[in-house]
Length: 280
Length: 311
Image (cartoon, rainbow over all chains, first blue to last red; front, side, top):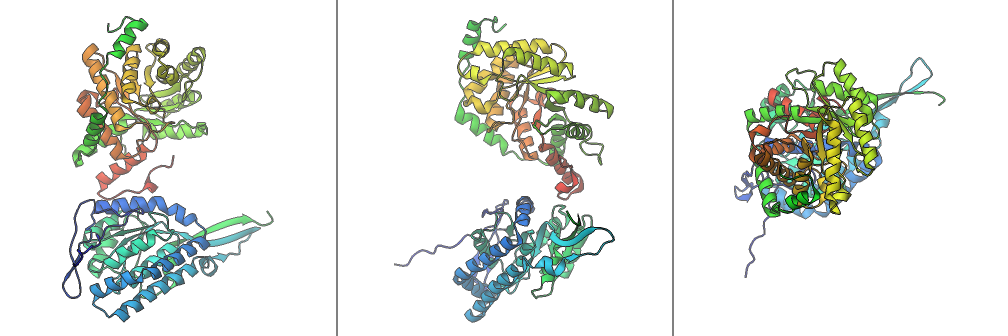
């Protein structure tokens, strides 16, 4: 006798929980072979609003964790991803239509990417900070500090690697993130939520929304509580819309090339200068 | 007269009150909380809610400086937008009343009343003599509203006349000088029946307002408790023709919470109670959220906490 399929309901990831969309909507995902795969949630602007509230309240705790501790947590994410790689292999193969070998390679690269950024956490202030000479009896230091809440639009493909590559640097800098998963390739991003939920990352530091980027973009751009946007996965036309909507509120908006670089972390950090009297 | 002032008639009246249907009250409160409020009603609700806020600070660490910033915020909650109404009142400890009153008067907030928490707030554990001095002190300092706590210990052990007399005596002190709000501290009364009973007891003894909580005990102003109290003032009005106000306090932090309270008021006591004279919300963090939601409605985009004051 054959068993009935027990399929996964792909839901959102907000504030450490996995809710359905507030709107109750879903949309259909088809694989590379045009066959139905899943009905993930179609997030609304109110889901985005909830995600921002969660991200904003979780961010100070994450930023105040020691850089060393943040590195440990990112490394823990890599460990968890390694243990769940089977699940990701299947999702990547059915979505992207690649070979098993290519899928495995993509997952390994994503894991290595997390490990690489975890190492950067406690070294950033050494490469980007400085001790400045001033004309007075003061020590004067400049060190990078987290920006706040960052919205992340990762590239669609390679689905898992592009997601991790965009998310890891935002987290390494002590920011909280709202990841808007690619519309057509969202499954690895949602499963990454399950990895994150078991990685000692405080709830709300990462929030994952699925659905149509075009619907969320005006709200992301104009939301005064979002401090930065990585729009690497956004089209040129949508980019213009985002930048226009964000013009009133001093957002840091960046598009990155498809590489790992500490500059990706520092883009979402601010330099803070501290004066301290010498001899005290 | 419903009662003749004797313990016997008070006991008789309170014991004949019908018990609260717990499941029904909770279900009705939950049902009313799901109502969807659309844009123009929401804009109205936010403004009326702002004008009903009793902007409160009741901390051991309160300083004159903090009271003054609170006063400024009470008069003009959003200095960048003069269409925002002033709040209903400032609520502070006794020793801060004079500072608050003179600050409000000097910045054009003459119409904003100062409420003082008196009678050994928050526990109410002091002798009647002390409670009287406490209240007189607040009145002398310029308080025009007195938020008194009832002796929950006496109420729970059945010494109803003691509670009644205490409220009556404090009301006598207030006379025409101040409104009297009676804090039931519903979180310590445990059952809805007790809340109903205490509400009537306070109203019979002369309260102008009945208030849920001190804000120092959880649970505070839960929706079913507010519902029971609103039913009590509605029925008391039908019985006597006197309108008593209601003030939920504690745990109301978001605009959503505040609007849920307003829906409860409208659907239970009726439109006449949708005024700062008969409904107040004791809160501190709530005001910022109301302002942020107001900004959102005006500008069309979500607001940030960076644009409202840190209190």
